[in-house]
Image 1 (cartoon, rainbow, N blue to C red):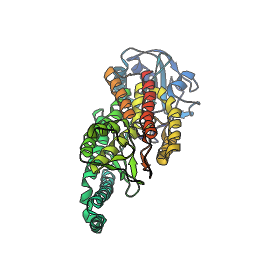
Image 2: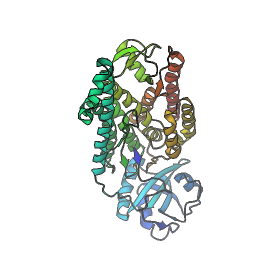
Image 3: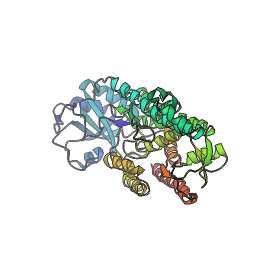
Image 4: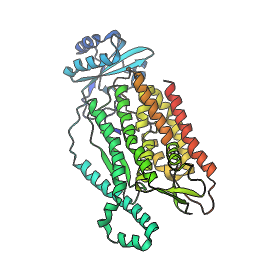
Length: 442
């Protein structure tokens, strides 16, 4: 889930009108009266160099002389922050202005920005084209899995005869294609409907095809938020709705797939899918023992592979950093302190890259985008108890679905599974505990 317009003072959409700040007595009297309906004003900040303003906007240097800041007031809100923001936002609508609520050292700061964000309309044709392309991409992967199953059951000649009919046999990949698109679709539509519930402008899902490149047939999907979140409650609702919705479909698909898959001797040189805590538990429940055990493993069918992929996608999105869903959830829970996890998470990712190059692409993404957060307009309103519980649930889901080694190659001799499985199962638990520790320190 990407956030189009930044909600920080220093990075606003280019369409926002720019005004010169520093004229608190010229034209701000009406704004001051509006702010006084929700806050007892103790002083008006009239300098861009004021340290409290710099802390409020998270700036490391003095903002530009030309800035969308129109007025800044410090004091104490007379209403609860959520009610106060709604009231002031409605009043400022007549002036085409937008309020930001911040808190510094126990003092409430209201920053009035010039110009409201008005996203333009977008068509849906690109979404449709990408969806069709992704459908074909995952059908091709499903067909390849079907051919492998036919080759194992009926012989290579039978599989080759089917493959020669080309795209006419795409229907054989339908189990995987339908299952994975159902999981990804539920994930993105969870974000979409949560955003629409809060009246936030958002795009339809963009699916990303990856034929012959990705082992899951796609690079996933995303939606684009076109307005900043109103407060941390909204950020949590939209951020958590996706992975939790996708998981509702991924878990039953996984169990159905495992129940219809077979357990057989591990073939040297074959690719083994990694274990997460949840995946290992699902296999243990289904087969009554831990797999792989060094000699035997489950040979996943199309549905089981879609379920495993659904868990993997859930974990990737829940990494608690930046613009990822996990970053939204953690930021909603503990605010700006979530930024402190950037370097610890990055360090863990570097260690994972040393274990398997499967994480190299994600390391690059985190380096580029891991420090950018979707900062809500109102940072004073806190989460209620129910939403804190949902946030902690999201972090727990990350811990139990994270796969440190997504793929590995079976060795020619008996596998020394204990060390490998110990790393696979203990590392996500350790990462989850770090995230939970950060969450508890809210």
